[in-house]
View 1 (cartoon, helix red, strand yellow):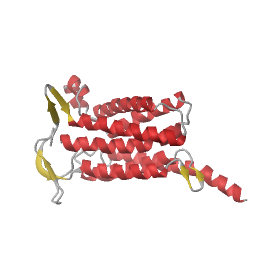
View 2 (tube, helix red, strand yellow):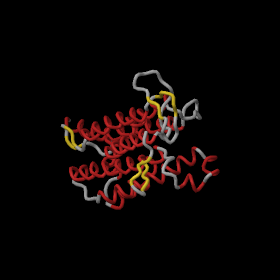
View 3 (cartoon, helix red, strand yellow):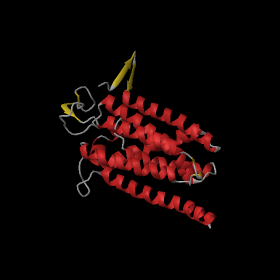
View 4 (tube, helix red, strand yellow):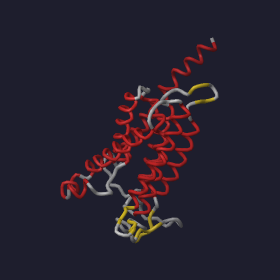
Amino acid sequence: MLPYLHIGPLTLGTYGLLVASGLLAGFFVLRADLRRRGLAADPNAVVGVTGLAGLVGSKLWHTLETPRQFFAHPLEETFSAFGFAFYGAVVGGLLALVWLAKHYRIKSLGMLDVAAPAAALGYGIGRIGCLISGDGDYGIPTSLPWGMSFPNGIMPTMARVHPTPIYEFLAAAAIFVYLWRLGPQSARGPRPAGVVFGSYLVLSGLARFLVEFIRLNPRSIFGMTNAQAASLIALAAGGVLLVAARKPAEETAWRKRE
């Protein structure tokens, strides 16, 4: 593992570099999606504001999950390059995107649809940062041939464990491809707003819920981790959104047939 890169007098955290790379990749995806949808919004502002809100939300969520650790070392925890939570980033990013939608006079669901593929890809790239830095996001011990140890990681372990960041990267990459191809159009005409974002919530929620079974996170709610509980909420919200988004389209198609 390689938690830090030393370039002359500079010391760079590999996790931070991969998160920045994820934001950059998300920028290009979001810019392309705005163009193909014909939406007038500045991709630099959207990625910048959403990324910042996501980082703040991620840090706050992690603080709520580990309050004792935070109060024991408040300054160190606040400015640490580690200690981020996925669903905190989702909440912070959602709030930022809703505000940006109002600012650019775009439907909120339309803005969320645009951001969904970019978010999936950016998250997957960020997980590679977890793998390279060995920050403790790995899974339980395994005898499978692809099990990995992290002797030089931020949180080292000599045991061979599930490389869950790789699992999450592969899932995120597949979700990104699906969401991108889902796109704003279908063979039947314009796709209803909210379908892409609803699919993102369902697929990413399901992926996170499943991987948590082999992660080293503490159990808290009905034997589930906090992330699993949040994943179920995401799954439910995404399902409701998909039903609500597709219903008007089905009604319109039915009326046309009449």
